[in-house]
Length: 74
Length: 541
Image (tube, rainbow over all chains, first blue to last red; front, side, top):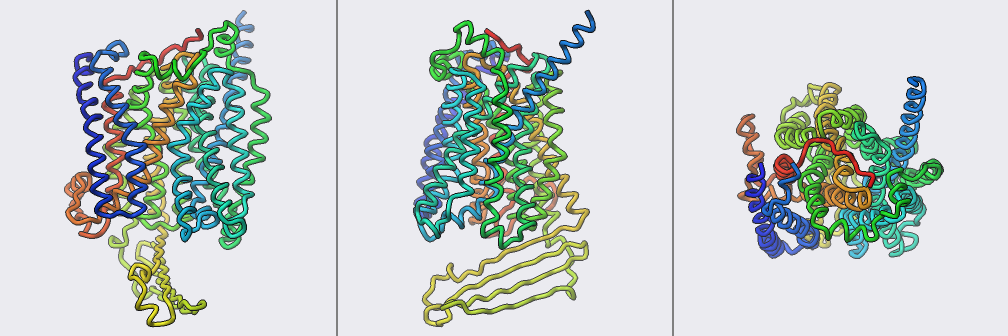
């Protein structure tokens, strides 16, 4: 189980890193397509609140998992 | 000897019951206070946040969202720290007073028509206070009860705290329905909506009185006596690797998935009934209320079961079944109310037209009433407002001339019961993921920083991941209208059931489910791979 936990750590960290440019590019494209107030509010929430939480927690969790910090949990 | 044991055991149980009752009533009231604002959002918006004032409209948006996902985690940090420094009892007494006071004052604030911009500004601040108080309440109540519970019954006892969020929602819906029905729609929209807010002060008064009589948690008292409380709970919780890794595990392996399952099963289900299925206001609220009442005891069932077989697999199973079955359940809900699947009795169709002139505007109302063979009734109210002057009408932008259409479907009894069943199944998933989670969270962290450490992942999971379900789901449904849109979930369901995909330009009703399915799916994998199943003994340090 420890080996799977560590390997998956790379996946979580990569997801965390990948989500940052993905969210920014999507937000820019959507706002450029329709620059309404609603669109601005929605993408601001995604970029300022949701994306940083997901990215930070996935990257940190992934690094911890990769280092074997969760080996002893199970 | 046996008699002495029996007497002391029954005293212990009776004392634990008092702790549960006192904690649960307060938490229940906090949830009630928090939800009535959400349930009355439309009226509040009309009273305090007029759409023609852009600043007020922006405040409305912020009040709706900020209280949920910015202020709640902040409240968790602020009050969590306080609870680990000075104690659980006084901290969650303070949160109760803040919540009750804010709710009561919202009921007293004059509308925008009376005091202008001050009205939305005051309501905005009060809503933020509500979010702050809620962020501090839950962690305190769960920690307090858990620290009074024996190791082998912690899931059972804390599950009563878990019922409060659902009961709070149920009571808020119930009180609103009763007040609305008693006063009539016009009076309710005028001033009657204030009654549920004002009622809160009596409930809070009773709860504060009960809580004042409670003693501090035995584990925290012992720690304080020995001088072992944390000097800096925030730093200890989030700067120390051993603790931070458990906070992340709690968030990504449990509370994020639990949050989306909770919001989908209880809030999105109501929104789906009203907006996608067009079920009439009262009937849709009754469907949700009945499903909540039938489902609520299962919080205790799964909480108690987690003491026997462990917390992990019950929560993971709840998430997995939710991920697999949301598509078919929502598809069946949509099909049940879909008028295209019903045969209309044409001779019973009534169309009424009404035209009136108000000032320079002409108001045209068309009401169409239909009856279907299965007993379903349908009412469509179309309101068109345009200037009497033909030149002014011609100069108006097309979107301003678009009629305001309200659709109301009332289901016959058998389909009404079927709908309750569909929502009940979702509430059951909620009870599986939410019933054992308080015990799971408190067992992850040591007493000295428990309140702080468990509150943050809980409120990020519920406030941010869960709280965003309505916003993101609505957005996904809107996006499904765009050309070239393709939803793998809908494609899969349409493939299995043989249904046709949503026509180009029309919304895909299942599109909104992609967000909760994705979050719960990732959370299921992380929880399954990294979490342990055995309930842990809590340290008293």
